[in-house]
Length: 248
Image (tube, rainbow, N blue to C red):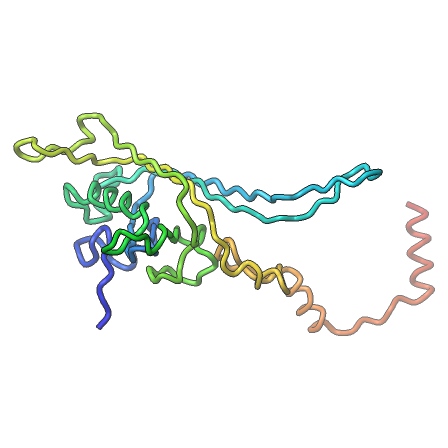
């Protein structure tokens, strides 16, 4: 019997359905097998690709010999995690403490996993997914481990709004639960299928984004094969065209 994947916010509660999950930003902890879902507001994403080269200087040569080392891909993103939308509706079933609970457990997943003898058995690995824009070329939204972009988190900040109207105080005031968190994450991508996409038909394979696109050269080839054969222009026709060109 398969064990149930722990999920934040909890699956099966009011408002958490498969259709709504497709519109959310997912952070999946590979190490702990836990997906976290957020409805991102003011979502900003910067993707940086950094080619690294090793220059070798040779006597008598003006330019160094450039040896390619690797390509580093970094995703920097920021968004506001809310309990409710700006209109007041609740697209996710966040109870008064569930948003804080999700952030708390996500922070814990940034640490390695240890066994009972306090020996590290797994580093903190994650998969990020946001519709087709951060999706590793997958065809559909899924919380399975094989879906999403694999990588490591190199920086994470979660700052909650301190305004009184953005913090919930239950009866008694013993605990405080922020309603809004400002999340900033730096994510270094670990490429899994890049080599296979670079071998052949590079322009026909999706990698960074999942999208529908009809390739222009495919359309042109199909049109050429379907078009009737046209006889080449005669010498008389060519000469007449030259005269017209000269007259104009």
